[in-house]
Length: 62
Ligand SMILES: [Zn+2]
Image 1 (cartoon, protein in one colour):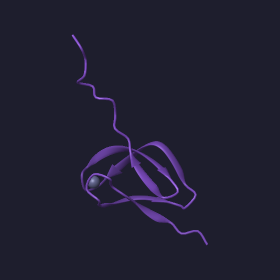
Image 2: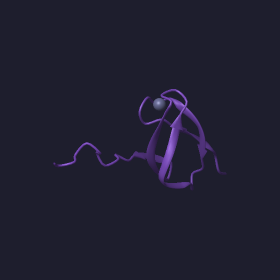
Image 3: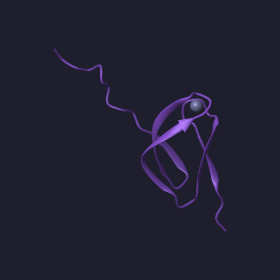
Image 4: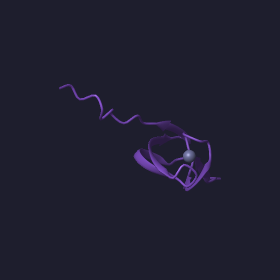
């Protein structure tokens, strides 16, 4: 039996409107959180959410 799980926002822990399955794999997925009202890049594998830290745009030398 496959069960759908709601994706949890890694920032605030709130429930998003995205569902994943046990066998869902997401790479560089822009997850929108209706609570934070912001998009977070995540990886999902085996129902585990990994937050992707985007390269810091401020680290420009010169
Ligand atoms: Zn959130």
